[in-house]
Picture 1: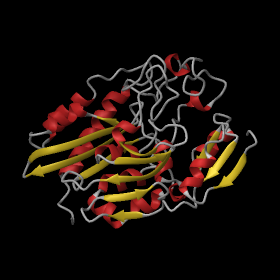
Picture 2: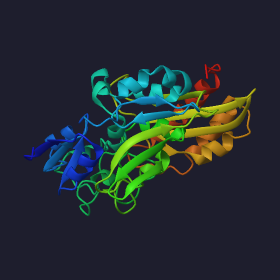
Picture 3: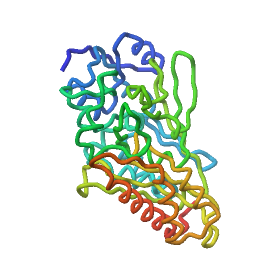
Picture 4: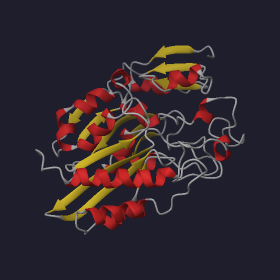
Length: 331
């Protein structure tokens, strides 16, 4: 591990000033960053601890929406009564991730910023355009069983690892950011970017910017929502394929829907194609199968991961079935 300095920020302004030093990173829970520092994948010279900032609150707004501070721990968010009742897909996604110990440390902002678990990215002996731009992508011709079938490029096929972010995409959540140029907001579906020719650029966050909070709007489809995660083992494992589904039903008819995928794409993946099939259709298995087919229509498999296409379809059908079967919760 490269030697580094460590500073505690007490205010947002102080944090933004400290991070302007060259090769400096924010740290909160540290559940991703410290691992990558140990592996020499990331080598910041300075760390700015932001745990003292007042960004650790979950606030229910008068309109029923949520304001979630960037430092809210994953466990607290998953078990919050309003999240469990009114945004079940978010609670389910959080509880499917990592272990209880890690969820007690991991933060909302850190979860959004976590980096891929691609073994070629995490091993500095291999070529990785995400870690070292221009070096190549060992996964393309290597063992790519866990890699992406959606959103990849000739430069990178690494999957995004977050469960929480997939649920937030399905809920139309918004990320709020502050930085040297002021404040701005970005829809979660647009916060992460496709690798294209620049896989090392993973989000729209600019140098010196800090996530302050996430807002989750109240919506008719959030109430009936579900998250399904398929993986190699039952716990403490990243998704091979996952699906977040949310449905607004009138009787058996789908008025509107949200569908997002994890484990199969280079970013948390909203499937507009699947949503188009669902809107206005009857909530039954044939509709769900058609939506799953549409969601994976443009998938591009590689040597070892073609199985993910069928696996993702099954996750979608199961998530939609569970969402449709949920009774109307308390508003």
